[in-house]
Length: 242
Ligand SMILES: O=C(O)[C@@H](CO)OP(=O)(O)O
Image 1 (cartoon, rainbow, N blue to C red):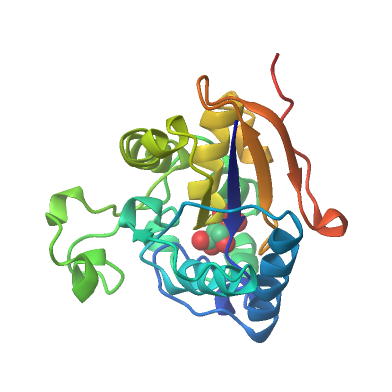
Image 2: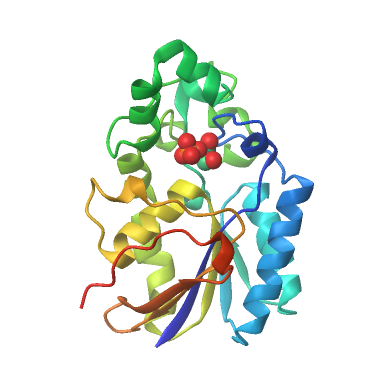
């Protein structure tokens, strides 16, 4: 058995402003910092010795991980940061206010963009201010590999090969891990671990800064049990298939 914590970053500035965020590297709000610290306290109560941690290239997830590791006094752990764990890229919706976008395009269209499995948002091109190649940290990556507007399906197709190649070997070896990431990159992991159907996975929401503790069978990598550590802010979990 191995213990896996999945934690979505604490509230970000653009969560607060209700803007499509995706790959924009916005920081945590004060409330987000408090959520991340609380996540650390909640994980500490579980008394788990971790072996490694993973996070994205985005500071809201990185800082959440720092604060959680501080909370459990395990700041020495090896941390791997990788862009494959980044949030879904929101294409040409990036930066727009979600309510204003509903007012302009209608509730149904915005719901399709946000919660369909395979409808991507409008794409951006290389010239666009939010094209990832504009950021120094992505300049070592072939621009053709960088996303320009992802559906949850496309996000899943970049997150899961990374999970299988880089994270699963740790889990199979029985290592306890923390992964700090984003609403949609975590949905991709939830889909794989809980074997959730394409059409059902957009319905599951990760609350910000609320660690999900999963007891995994280290052979099958399927969950034996799972719980959010902050019960008051818990959301529904997929059923565990026998
Ligand atoms: O804006 C975003 O990047 C994501 C997560 O905050 O939003 P959504 O809830 O639409 O997936």
